[in-house]
Image (cartoon, rainbow, N blue to C red; front, top):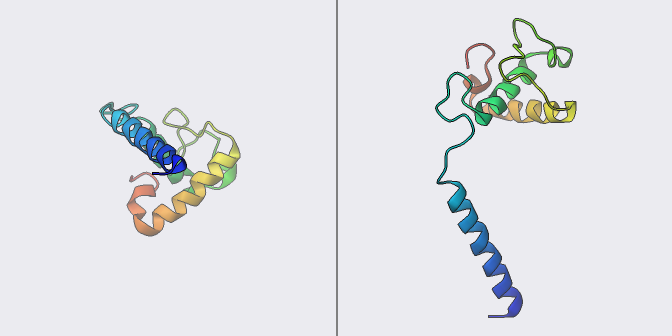
Length: 101
C-alpha cells in the first residue's frame, strides 16, 4: 500500500474504534424521565421552532415551558432546529407535534 493510503486506513480504523468505544456507554439523560437528555432537547427544540413564531421561541408561556428544555442557544441554532424540524415533519409529523409529542 502507498504511504498515503496506509495513513488514511489508520485514520479510518482509529475513527471506527473511537466510535465503537463511545457507543458502549449511555447518553446524557438516558432513562431519566421526563426530560430524557440531549436527544429529547433537540426534538423539543424542533417542536417549538416549527409550531411557534420566532418571537415566542425564547419566551416562557403555555406553549413553551422554558424549564423543560427551553431554547438556550443563539437564534442561528434555533433556525437550524426550525429547518431540521420541517424535514422531520415531512417524514414523521408526530415527532414534532406541539403538546402531543
